[in-house]
Length: 323
Image (cartoon, rainbow, N blue to C red):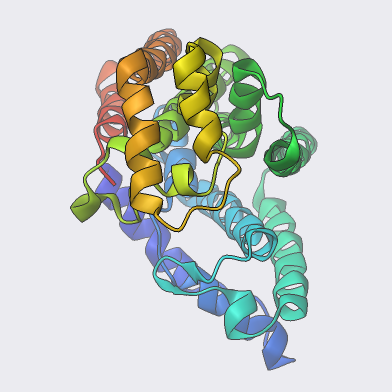
């Protein structure tokens, strides 16, 4: 099977999910956000993790869907915190309805995610629920760190990397570990897949940081330079601040934290500092470090090489993305 086959299976299963009917104002927002699409990376990884060890994927499907429902629950609440007007090009739930509806609908999504895990075999259920609960708490920890960093003037590069590990990467790692466990993998193989997913997740977020500055506006899918305009602390900015000389520090200080009517000039000036310091090359090197470490973990998994090749190819395509 190919990733496309997995995705088609996931899309069909998601379309058949029932969340509830009444009151409509509670359940319609759930159907709305779940219908907005997306890459479905998390359930895809769950099925791909299981496929390394088994051909019987139907028992894995509903737990895989749980990861997607949970992910969209976090998006519902994140959008409120970020006051985001759009999600995947459409109005966010709190904009289309209101914040109270978005909070409550999100709460139900978390409940439904746990219900979907009840399809896990009884012998594995305590382990899966414990690992999922830990992962869910870590995602929340990452979101809180991300919000704290907005007002914290002193954020280290290592703190930032740990934040994106928690906010984004640990869920990808859990999905692969979940699939492996449901597919009958050993604990050691499941651990290697979890670390593979976590490393890929960190590399994925670092590439997103990079594309925000150096991506092609025609393919990136959002405004290039948006992180610079919003003074977002990214790997690029934190590395620049750590390495800048006095004139470069002065240039950064001139724009960071200051209202600017000319956002294009701000993006150009800070990007120029990045260019002087070779921040793009350094970011690409760090991305490659995480990615190579991920591949080492995948190599250690005792599964058929052709099946591992599918997962490797997916990761390579993910890292080559331009949007």
